[in-house]
Image (tube, rainbow, N blue to C red; front, top):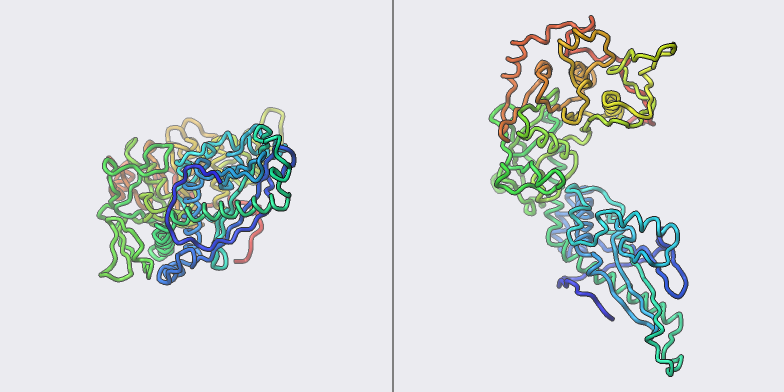
Length: 545
């Protein structure tokens, strides 16, 4: 048995049960040289995985379904770190002229560890070519950083069910025959083995190989699994309290919002990054979360602390209330960074992300322009109406059932707003940097010059959407002052520091008096009522609950 250099970790090995099934990407290939790929499904009791530690297991059970997702996520990340081609291959010889190289890879690698010159079938060649063009197929130990976002998602390759942990891996057996190694004077009895004995040897080697790899993965995961679980559980319980404080989002003090770069999900080092601190205003609140036995495994920000040694954890931070909220400030002062933190709050983040104590209601949706998107039977009449038609065409465009193969910036964003309402969003997150300018706002001078306009900007609709539908909106603006006429609260960023600018914004709005202009006889500009005919078409099955 020949092994590559492997990092060994001494642990108490869980009792893994391994079963095999055929790989749909690469069925077995028969011949002198070939490849056989199978899916290995590995199972272990969660309590056994946690080293039969009753206190750890009891704490884990308190997290419920969230704890199971967090455990699966932690193990999947360990698989990505430990099982890489450089340390997950073995070569065995069961015949003098035949060697079998076994390789384990996570399912998302999609056969990227296979030699492309092998005799693969058409389907396998297609998937192999596809995987070789992906960044995650480079076999680097840093591949998990490229593959996994800092969010905990339910997975189909690692999951928990009925108090058991399941892991699926791909094991690839490549067979090579070499005539140069055969001593021609040797008898067949000295060289050959029966097919049954041959297969038995390979199966035993596969079991041992996979079990050893999983032992290493388990050792890597066990070190931080309960912190992973506690962090996810805290976010879930904190998010559940947002409705009671009438909030859309909560950003905790001490959070690190900026990332290392625009292409990285890793937090920026602090310093130079400034830890988040909520302003001293009505938008600053304390929230307490009961953590039970998981409290001991939670690593807190500077802005959080257990209450008098109990299992209740109290955090202080910025609350984004229901209604229309503006995030204003100069360029590069952190407006979009704050909005991205709010947008990421719908997911549970991993420990060390820097934003793991900041949460948002699950039904918040980011809305932006998507030039060129496909739209089918979408009611955009609240924003788009009276579209012009070419000369000689008498039929008008029905924007209550708007369809196009290539939407413009404004029609695409109008469709996205309508679809967010249709899908039951409770909050919309909008950044002017990635929005259509004519969909966001239209000032008085342009209204005076261009009287016949088909677009009713979002600016005029956000208050009606909240008053009639209860859907809040958080908008990043920095260039159009008309938005100061509509918000319920305004957050200002100045050199990455947070201020409550609500009163100042209201003063500016009164001074310029934009809110007293009538809009086409339909009401005060910027505060149009939401017309029921603008309600989205229900294009999906809905249930009573």
